Image (cartoon, rainbow, N blue to C red; front, top):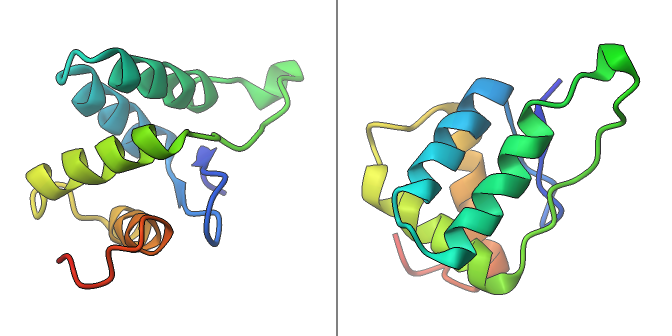
Length: 101
């Protein structure tokens, strides 16, 4: 079961560890858009279902999705698990970037 599921496309998911690493990458951009997205991702990745904390989808704005895509493009292929590849593909579809590899 993924630790974080995004609210777009086919609902791509990441493990909690991958999500926390992605949040850290977003934070390095030091923009308000990135910091807000990182906060949302980190919050979901660190929730404790054992303590009754319900999971929810991470819903990001289009500007946050675009930034997420750009960050993932920069770190590829060093951060290329199956889940990250799926997330990038879903981001490309969502952002209509089918020809942008």
